[in-house]
Length: 592
Image: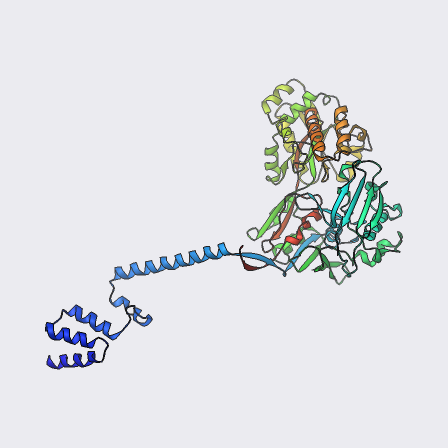
């Protein structure tokens, strides 16, 4: 025992606290063993907190229960630290789009004339024209008209003169400057009947003048409120096309290798061994007057929808220009896909032949309207992908009258009461495309349930024009392409009835005629809205047609592509209306 005390005494003399310990030991004669152990440990290490190496001996001092509690506590502590870190990061940093990446889109068909004079006739041509050329105005992916090349514009008090100022510093893809000369040149080509542009009929009689390098004036023979909607064609470079004759224009190389001023320019085009176009490779125009994020854009061509969809399913492309409703079940990749159902500017309805006996009475037509459950129809046939239509003007139009939704609501009981004893027989004609046969069968079941005898007459697309021209139908399932502006004069004014007009129901109402005529020349938007709302009430009360639905255009993208927004289009090319907002690459930046 004496020898052990001597060894301990020698050890603690060498430590910082040895003197205190020695005096205490000497005076007390003995210490509690626990106190001795504590002092021994503290004297061996100046730190009160265990080192990393010491932690590995922790289990030797803790019971199993204490060890489990400690482990759980450490896990909770770690998770809380991670959670707080994530919250901090989310609150203080955000993803920001950056330039880069490649987007490949599959489309059905092959380009022929990527030329603003003719591109509107074919979707593939129009898609590429929209990406390569700029226009004075364009539609966004909400179906709203917006300035494109135009910086500002003014309209005179009579609504006949439009003065437009174009943006400064806009360049063609070959670095030439775009000026008002290019606008005047393009407009004159469209108006020249020798070039046979499908745009000409809408612009006949309108004059254009150059004011200066950036200002143009259009002079109309009479006021026309939707005039700006006509200026959505691409502007062509005069220095490229000047001197090209009407006889040779469609053979010009610039139809397939165009020079524009739009967000993308031609990089190269690939052909198959047989000489067919396989894809267009576009590259971002860094001189574009808006910032573009996706660097490379590839449009790949396929002969049919099945091939295009298979390519998407096999990760060979990132998007489908269109997914027809009949092919929706062929799309396999759903979790990694964004599907956008964009409302088209079309209203499908059941158009009555108002000259047919039995259909001349508005009470009969109203009862037939009340017999149809539109929501049930759209759900059963189109899986709710389409939008209910309640009138002759699109729901997303600034002139839409929501009050018409309460006119002729579904009421099977009321319909049956009004049709009781009428012994009504109807031949329901439908063009056999896009699920129309199923719609016709559904309409037949609604009407037969209220005592109407229905015969379905399915006709081909080729037969449709002659059937409509001769008015060889009782009721026809038909869709009107109404465009972006609420001007529906061509479809409903009495002057448009007859075999050459689009008023296929032969609808005539003096008050409706007056409202349509006044609304299309009114320069005050509030005045136009008031007149179109009144017109919609009249048409829905007279029931020359039962408005059913607006079809949707289904656009598909891989989720790697960000930034697409929208719910409506005027033409399929309008899906690119805000392509400058799309992006693939991102970086973290500090949130403001």
